[in-house]
Image (cartoon, rainbow, N blue to C red; front, side, top):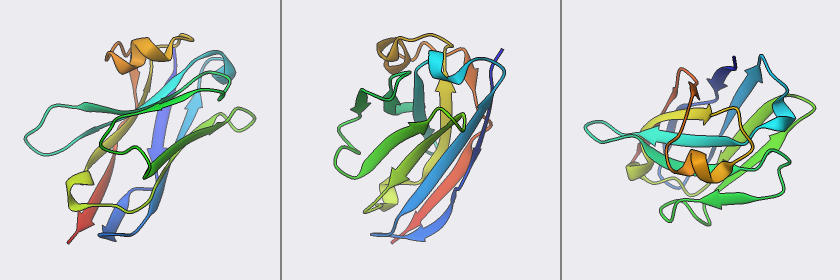
Length: 125
């Protein structure tokens, strides 16, 4: 079992920045890939970014590429999502997620076994 707890959401003006954190527990954090997803009102949940278990490889959705950075600190069992140049269309509930395995590609396909509770990000225009 893996438990995930997000924090760091909030209200920000367009063009601003936020950093989300996700603390993991329950299994050896450095052994599994992690991802961030988001769900806007009335829309399906969508992939945002993934990071390999070692932190050596990252992948981003086209809509956030160049503005968001995913990173992890395996010593702190925490994954981060640094968001810059935020836009109103980034408004959503953000979730961290994993399937407990080392394959980030499976995460990008939505093969998720563990979700956090979500944290709200609201970007005002």
